[in-house]
Image 1 (spheres, rainbow, N blue to C red):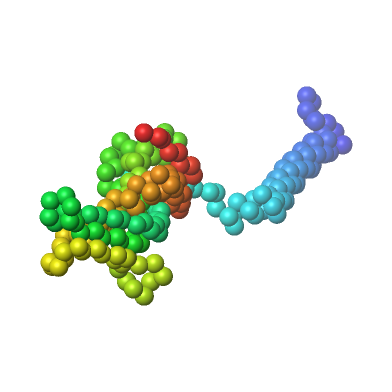
Image 2: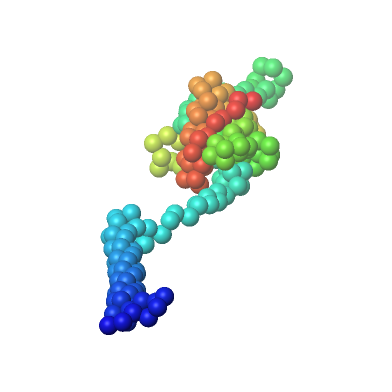
Length: 232
């Protein structure tokens, strides 16, 4: 077969064209294989990521959200108790009173055996806003309590009670009506003696200590974590 001058033979030209087609086909096939491998790798990675326990937990359990704790105002919690009677005592005494009826010679005498109850505590209505202070951390409350005081003192007149008040003796040297004021004076004297005995026995200290325990319990139940009491 003759070769055209300055050119390639038809056989050589055909071979070159065939080789070019085969090369192009190989490039296309390689590109398809690479694309398939990349898709497969991405799917495998996605499957592994889904199977990751951390990912499963994040899917099932949403991330925690901040918790906002709203506590009621401490001063309102304390004031709500109003008058807090935290200690009481049952005391008895003997009161004797005399009343002159004729000069200083003739007199009337009365002896009273008295049994009374004393209640002590803290009047929380006296609290000011500044007496109950929440510290900057929002968890600690400082409380300045009013002084403990005697809230109630009374004599027991119920004869069915183990301890009751009664007139033990009355002396009237004159045949004249008995003084109605004499027993009232004896009762008042007995009440005063009972109040004095209660204070001397430390009833006010007991009342303050018990008030602190009660207020601390209330504030802790309200959500605060620490209660401090300031002495006057």
